[in-house]
Length: 329
Image (cartoon, rainbow, N blue to C red; front, side):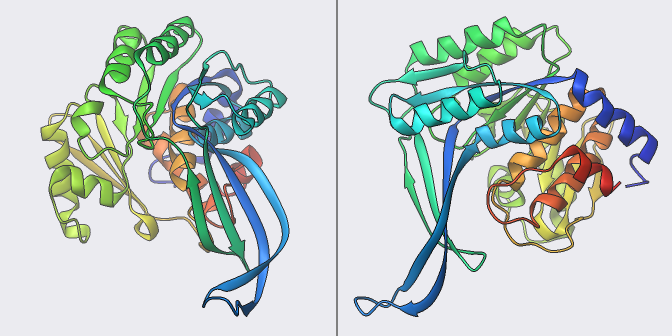
């Protein structure tokens, strides 16, 4: 931590969160967790029988990025597409309870709101069910999202494009976002899922995990020896200012464009790993909010790395509070 950011500077940036705002655009989801215990195997089939004790429903996907920023005290806006169904209406209620503007949430009739149901027993996921549509959203939905982005141009310091490949993020959407942000001081950040990174060109910083980065670079990414080659390949191939590769227990690697590509390694901060659900959302949420709060890329990555180290020690789609982040500085 001390190498890339001082505690004084970190606290200054975190204090600025209250005066900073981020727009999150992408695949909005709902996470449903069913918690229980397993004490026997079913006589009907060789599967565990889960005795359900409780369940919880919470914001997921790109909405979990929003949760992260909200928990940090930052201003946050949301844009995405949901269905005209009970799951979508529940999601809107959760946003309104947090006093989040819902004008950027487009309702598309005939499309289900994405729902991921996870059964968790003794702290471990047993199985997951997904109810979703991956069809590209129609142009009218894309246009509504872009109109919302334009309305916020003078209110935000960063935009997160949270792509889960569920049909919201397209080349047309990203081109529209770039055009709206051109000439402003808005940082554009992408958490990618599509293997063709050309769709994300012109973005300031992209945050793939090492598997996604390896596929996009056409490299069989195995160990640290390949890291520099990975960064150089992707920054040579695509127009990004920076590449932040999340590497699980190996931490994170930041590659910044300049006269030469600069690589900075951030060791993992997790003491124990229980659940990586939503860890990528935490990383890009804290990164974008920190950039909006006037941090540079190394400072923002350092704070995001510490936040990720906290969240993987929790079970389920979790967030990190300002107080928790400050406690590990």
